[in-house]
Length: 208
Image: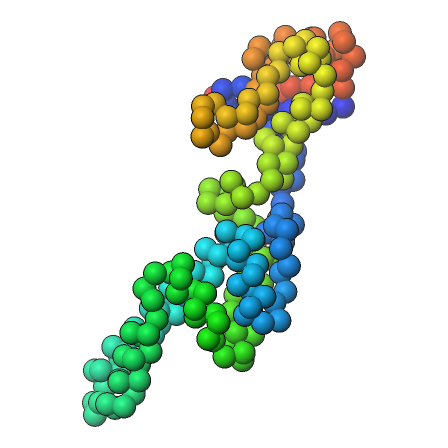
């Protein structure tokens, strides 16, 4: 028996669904990088990964700027160090998209393995930021997406009997995809029981 929660607006979700615990489970890219070129290649296949590398690059620029400010205010000032830091900062693009790739291509192997790889490995270990990354993760990795996949495999007669409708975008350009219950929970459960369909519906515990 498969149980589905009915969310606000009728959206269906698999009850008790365990969503992925790490990005490693849902992104189809290698998560081990021997060289910076490997990481640049993976960025082209995974936009959220590219965003994380761009954040790392932005953090690097901030750290470099902080080092420069410290060097400028230290007395006596090390003119050569200031000039070196200024030249380094000026050579790096402010644009994160281009700058991150240029930075990776020039980064020393020791720094890449000791800092960047460590950060990216942790990023893969962490769960996705659904608000930012949802559009890049296959929908069946979510409770809502798993429910939609289940009902997509059901015949039209059974869907009609249960009062379930598959919604693939509410309007052009919409990213909303779901199975929705278009009748009351009581009606749907009576119909499922009468037709001997192995599904039941319950109210989402957070629903008003």
